[in-house]
Length: 174
Image (cartoon, rainbow, N blue to C red; front, side):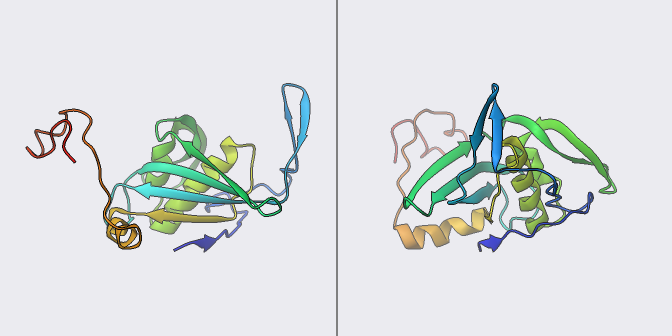
């Protein structure tokens, strides 16, 4: 399900978007840019578990929709991007923002919503506090629902790396 962003300011909570951050203007290499306020940003995260609880994000996709021009753009972020994410100790005490892999930002949450918010905040922070209005997480359980909408999904095996897991998954098979 797609959920409207819940902004919180508590340091130990997800979405501690800083209220004094101005995402309307950006300075890059000494040049100032204005944020397009017609954009609506959606974060789609895919995780490697059946129920969405725990695990890591296998893919992170930002869909940016320009309401004025009725156009969209997709930005797929590499799960192994080395960025600032929230860090916690074993008792889930917030330790601050430290560099680690984007995929791990999801792993620190205690439930699907919190995990998704941690990933959303890491992506927003990476992109100069860009507002992410909606977010959703897809788990392995959602694949059959997607296939119900799209129809059968064909995947071509590009090499023999998966043959040990299933002899039918050899190079060239579909």
